Image: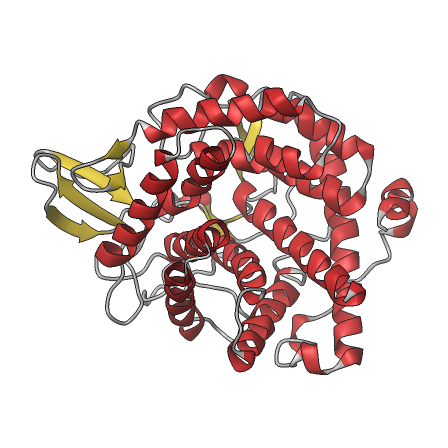
Length: 413
């Protein structure tokens, strides 16, 4: 559908104007055909411009052994090797681009960057192998028939075996690989790990050890029990005594304070719970996802862009949290049976996407490599505030992909 846009990108895209989010932000799209059509057109334009950004990014990065993390204020990617936890997002974005466009160039580029990640399968010092291998090798198995499927499968299984070693039976959780505070006999666990459980779930269904799925289930249930407060807000980190399994304390590493809610970590949990429901069909996880989502939505501004911390007085926007949340909501909307709740979350992801596709968040200059601006990679690092992040681009394109698939299903019903 978008293939003709990629072929004529230089001549067709320059005149495009990203529509203002204000015109769409308070509209119940599903109930208005004209508004839905306008939104669909905006999505198509955003996809076309995003593809142009990726064309530029490949030309600028050149080396498939280097991976974007976050960009500087001039919108130039900082690059790292495959050891970085963010390494899977750029090739994952290229796989999303291939799915959206059908253009073989994106598949070729995605394969180049994906294949150089294979050396990370034995990295037992990382809890983020799910990010690295499901965004890349996992997407490839779903999106492409032009790969060595058995080789890709074995790579994922090897990565899952490595991640499974981090499971701590005494606490029923997968341990984190970092902490910025020292506590005697501490095993730290962070909310981010919810995003890595799919690696274990997929592997358990595709030739790996069946107990890996049980690790994922136990981790998700214990995460909700120990990380989520009564009002639906959440902690970022919980530290456990490695001998007794008892909780030492709860707090944050990247939020504003120990009793606040770091928005990206909260979005990770929502997304992870939706994935748990997809694999298990256990309504417990869907209920958890809804409860966490309700808190997230209650803290959003009218334009749908989250602050870096949902409870902080420091009003610093973070597009990454909203992009992750929007993608999770699109999938979750397909599981919700209650009509009013489904309408509520459908309206919410429309608002978020509409804003992300608009100034000042969407980068209109397609000579620049990044797609979405104004993420918070790490608030304590001034250079990592209010800049593009590789994971923002990934979840933004994944959300657009999911939206297009949902629209396609609607048409064919």
